[in-house]
Amino acid sequence: MTAAAASPPEVLRAPLVVEFPFTRSLGPVQSAFLTGLREGVVLGVRTSGGKVMVPPVEYDPVTADELRELVEVAPTGTVTTWAWNGEPRPQQPLATPFAWVLVRLDGADTALLHALDAPGPNAVRTGMRVRVRWAAERTGAITDIACFEPYEGDADGHTAVPHDGAFGEPVTGIVAEARLDYTYSPGRAQTAYINALSERRTVGERCPSCHKVYVPPRGACPTCGVATTDRVEVGPAGTVTTFCIVNIKAKNLDIEVPYVYAHIALDGAGLALHGRIGGIPYDQVRMGLRVEPVWSEGGRYPDHYRPTGEPDADYDAYKELI
Image 1: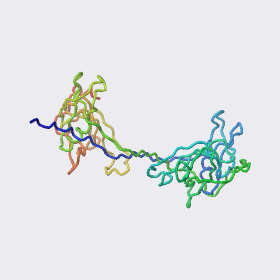
Image 2 (image 1 turned 60 degrees about the vertical axis):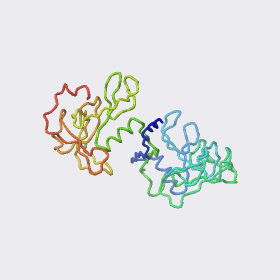
Image 3 (image 1 turned 45 degrees about the horizontal axis):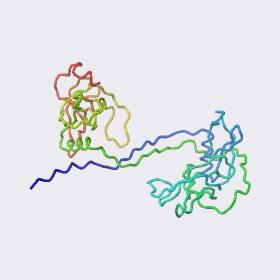
Image 4 (image 1 turned 135 degrees about the horizontal axis):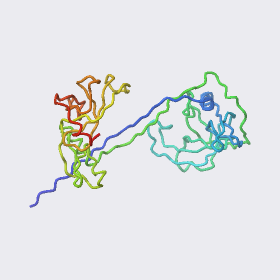
């Protein structure tokens, strides 16, 4: 009778959202375009060569000339290309499956990217006629076009007509929200690292060639290119190698500014990790300061690091880790 082989530990997986919202101001062309959408008008801009671009741009992509000649185009157009989206993600234009389409609006020479509400991919084709479906409430954003919908009419020889771009209460700025929504897996090496942190231990991996201990481990040595499978417990104490003073309060982070964020070389590690320094005035943090982790109740990683009370480390002891 032989013993069953132990199964490998489960590799961790977790949903991850990365967001970068930022506020930007608008020039006269973009301001007129978004304000026009709020008013149910689609504006483009005429280039030096006479082409009409929708969405409008502020500089000619061929000559780099500044563009200011605004024109109004029709809310109807023709699909130039498309792709079916069978699983819409949060905050996309429609909650049900739809097609991403490039639509050349009547009177325009370029295409606008947006969603097409269609019952299925068989109902979409290049060359089909569509029209704008306006949002019930419009604020001066591209989402004022709720989507496109199929349209039976033809182009009717529509041409772009001049427009002065003047509207009451123009939109002068927007908040652009960049967002990535995905499932992250840290892999074998970092799974072991995270599991050890839950036991209040810090475990790295040693390269069998150069013998450097990586914390957090990467699964392979970036210098030698070989797998790192020899696990080594390091710390818990370490040395501040470099640091910065943070003076801007981060959203959703309950830490009073100013505070110090530092690179910390844990004893036995060949690579510094980063952590917040607490338990000492920010202006007394220094290179060489000896620190130890402070764990919050139920925390899976150190909340911050505080001074151990030991003498500062000699520069030669950590200079290779800066």
